[in-house]
Amino acid sequence: MPNQRTRLIAGNWKMNKTYSEGVTLAQDLAYKLSENTDGVEVVVCPPFTDLKGVQSVMEMDAAPFHLGAQNVYWQESGAYTGEISCDMLKNVGCTYCIVGHSERRDYFGETDQDINKKIKALLSAGIKPISCCGESLEVREANNQVAFVVNQIKEDFKDVTLKSGDDVVVAYEPIWAIGTGKTATPEDAQEVCGAIRETLRDIFGADIADGIRILYGGSAKPENIAGFLECEDVDGALVGGASLKADDFSLMVERSV
Ligand code: PGA
Image (cartoon, rainbow, N blue to C red; front, side, top):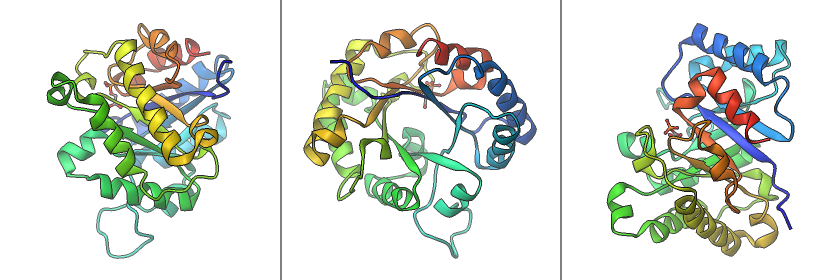
């Protein structure tokens, strides 16, 4: 039986696009996506400074996408210079938030414990976490990718309660494939995404786990998206580089319909 999960294509703009560039990209996307998102959910995750501008475009152009942030801090408010809370994200219209991206783990020292706190804070605020996991080249070369990612999932979702599988999204992003042009094969993706699904079943039970969307990320582009979507446990993509061009990103959405 084909699964009932709605495909999801999420764009991670990373540290790209000033406010005005972000507004232009959002307008282009709203225009290009207006006809071809049937049955596919689309999320764009701009930098914090662009969120309000992209939200205004979404409202004015009835854009067929949701708004996501790239990071959050788990405390509610207070003396945490430079940080952004769940409430702040909610107030500018975010319904999704990426957590645990490998760039945050590697460059900013985020741990699975931090990610776990962020997931819990987002869920309490009613924002859906897009929780990232993935192995380094070293781990892949030692053929330890499954054990490594399964452990990340267990740590990141420790003591997390979900009402439904729709509450969270998991993104499997092998670090060696991010921004490098090297993609994992669909078989590589399915091997790990299948193991992620099994782990989620152990944690949350099959009813909930079978409703959780698992995305592939790492040099995903219009040319290779179809292959990943054929995998049983891949329900979409988290797209970096190719999400910065409205043509490429909308083509990826179109090819996911
Ligand atoms: P990429 O980035 O598509 O540019 O490889 C993906 C990501 O890091 O989310």
